[in-house]
Every structure is written in C-alpha cells, then in structure tokens.
Amino acid sequence: MKLWGGRFSQPPSEVFERFSGSLAFDRRLLEADIRGSQAYARALAQVGIYTPEECQRVVEALERILEASRAPGFFDGATDEDVHTFVIRKLKEATGELAEKIHTGRSRNEQVSLDMRLWLRAEIDRDLELLALLMRALIGLARRYPNALIPGYTHLRRAQAVLWPHYLLAYFEMFWRDAERLQQARKRVNVCPLGSGALAGSAFAFDREAMARELGFEAISANSMDAAGDRDFVLDYLYAASMILLHLSRLAEDWIVYSTDEFGWLELSDSVTSGSSLMPQKKNPDALELIRGKTGRVWGALCSLFVTLKGLPTTYNRDLQEDKLPMFEAADELAACLEMARVVVETTELRPERARIALEESWVVATDLAEALARRGMPFHRAHQLVGKLVLESLRRGKKPSDWTPEELAAFSPEFTAECAILLHPDEGMRMRAVPGGTAPEAVRQALENAERRLESLLQSVASP
Ligand code: ARG
Image (cartoon, rainbow, N blue to C red):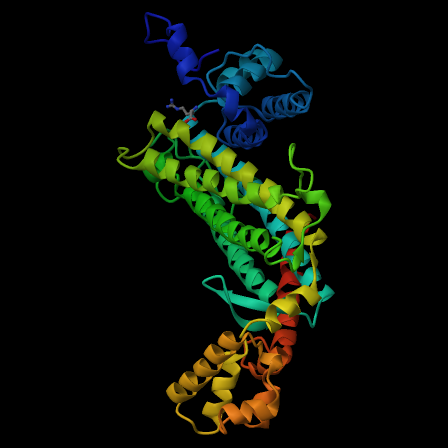
C-alpha cells in the first residue's frame, strides 16, 4: 500500500521501491507508531474527525495489530514503504474506511520523529538501568578487596600505590557522568513533535499539550519547521553512547593488560574468556576485546549521522531515513556492551599478593620519600634529585626499596631519617594522600559511601514501576 499516488501516472520502478523502502529496519518502531497513532486518533476525535465510537474502534484495532505483531512472521511478505504505511494498511484491513481518516492532517515527517523519540526514550531508560547495574558491580568488586593495594600507572609505568577501590571508583565517576549525559539526552528526546504536520504546523485545532501528556512527553516542540528536520536528539544520544563506550573501552584495555602474564594481578573468569583453536594454553580476553572493538562501531554511528545531517536543507529530506540504522546499531551495541561489562566485573578476581609483588619490586614509593624530605624543609627539587640518585643506585645494585636497611639508607645520605625508611613500604605513602579525592583509606571510605548513596538514588530512579 502507498499513502500517495494520485498525482502520478506511472508506478514506481521495482528498483526504486527496493532502494527506498525502510520497512526492513523501521519495523522496530511498530509499537511506538501504534502508540502514537492511538493518541492521534483521540486527538482527531477531539476535533470532530472521528466520532467517539469510531475513535474507540480505531484505538482497539491498533491494539490488536500490536498484539498480532508479537507472533513470528507478522511482517512476512509485506512490501509497504515503511512502518507508518504498514500500520495504516493493517488498520485498513481491520477497520475498512475508518483507516482512511487516521492520517488527516498528519505527516510521516512528524510521525517518524515521534516514533523515534518514543523508541529512544524507552531505550535510554534501559541503558540507565544497565549502567546502574554495572556501577553496582564495580562497587561490589571494590568491597570485595577493601584494603588491597595496586600499582597505579602513568604512561603504563608503575607510578604510585593506590587502593583497589580507589581505582574502581575512578570508573564509577566516569559512568556517573555518563548517566547524567543519558538523562540530559532523555530530556531532549522527550519532546512531542505531534501537531507539526509536514513542516508548517497542523490546520486542525489540536490540543498539542494534551497529546504530549498522553504519550508521556515533558514538552511540545516549539517550531514546526524545526521539528520536521531535527535529529539533534538522536545525536545527543549517540554522543552519550559513544562516551560510555569510550569509558568501557578504556576499562577493557586496562583489564586486558592487568590480566596478562606480564602483569598478572587480575584474573578474568573462565566464563568470559575463550581458548585458542591451536594453542592449548591460551585463555584470551575476548569479551573485553569485543567491547573495545565495538566502540568503533558506535562512534561510527555518531559520525555517520553527523555526516547525513550536514548540509541538509531546512525541514524534512529523505536523507533523514538514514538516521535509523545508526541509532539502532548504536543502541544495540551499547546495551550488549553494558551487560557484558557487568558480567566481567562480577566475575573478575584480584590477586592482591601479585599486585603487592608488582608494587614492592618497583619504586612507587619514590614520590613519598621526596615529599617526606620536602615536609622537613628540603626544597622539593633537591629532594627529587636525591631520591632519583637513590633509585639509580638501587637499579645499579639490583636492590628494591625493601632491600634497604635504615642504616644503609642513612649511609647513602644522612637526610634519609628513620621516617624515610618507613616510607619504603608502599602502604605508608598511600595513607598520607588524605585529601578529598585522594587514595588514603579514610578518603576512599568516604568516596565509596558517597558513590553508594548516588548509586542508590540512580537505581531507584530507573526501577521499573
Ligand atoms: N520512511 C521515512 C523516514 O524514515 C518516513 C518519512 C517519509 N516522509 C516523506 N516525506 N517521504 O524518514
């Protein structure tokens, strides 16, 4: 079926129909299209196009179409141009000529925007829940090893000792900002375009606010021309999704590295790794590698929609049909990655004793020593120099920090007092980093509690009613 044709004397070529049809992918908008059409039918009754009884029949017929759509093969053989046309054909099969009035004053231009907004709003709610569950898993993993110390890295070189929960909270903060970004995107998504017509606004006196309320929208769009061509809301979502994937990808990279034989202080579960078809000893971090790999696809979706929109004349152009595949693809990959990451976090184990070896055989305490000297009045540059010499001497003699006795240290330089000898143990310097946001136990305890409070409120806000 077509929603147009009167002014054409030739049918579309079969090639053009195949080329331009979108039902193969926009069928995912079916439920949104039906909800939107039900609201529209009620609005049409308000302005006298349908009688209340006709409206009721249309609304019920649409509900039955939705139910029928859950059966397999529902779309088999359909050749309609898009999901909007498909729904109207089905409505026609069910209600006859009543269906011919459903599109009164309505354009697919507003309809496609409406459907995408409804679809995306539900998707964002699902993402927020998946994100919150991942954050809960991170807190759980932090709580499993509350006192464990790991090397913190800069340039992927052992830098300073940090508490394991402090490291995980870094990711909690990234994901917290991501949740905020999703919520902001949701606000822009949650605007109702219905009543905008094709581009100029409807000539029927709809109560747009009432239509918006019925569909759960917070606001109505302010300008019909803007509404017809606006896909900012999809880009906002794709950006938020890209940022989440960026964070997931960095986490994945960390854990791939930390679980290598070379680092060896993180153990990925057998259940999220796979073996080699040739090399019997292998346990490969495929789940994390796929998260890292899929990141590129989500960024591709963001980039692809940006390019589609650039240079489009104001209001609707058919190019906009190309907005849906990137949206679906990004949403699917995002949800899959969030779920996978949660399972990895839930099943990963720290090997605190291996982390300690990594700490103790390196010079992560060097900064602690230099700062101790500076606290006693030595200019920091001199302290830095002196500790640097100590490190150099240790490397020459193959000594690690704990190999130095207090006497040997004092013999190396009288500036190194007994306090400095204590600081050769990585726990001591870590305890001194007690500023808010630092890694000292008390600061981390407070940060953990603060994170748990925020997570609790996020979990409550995403809980399905
Ligand atoms: N399938 C179209 C899309 O996704 C629906 C809108 C068609 N509008 C039009 N004027 N051709 O964008």
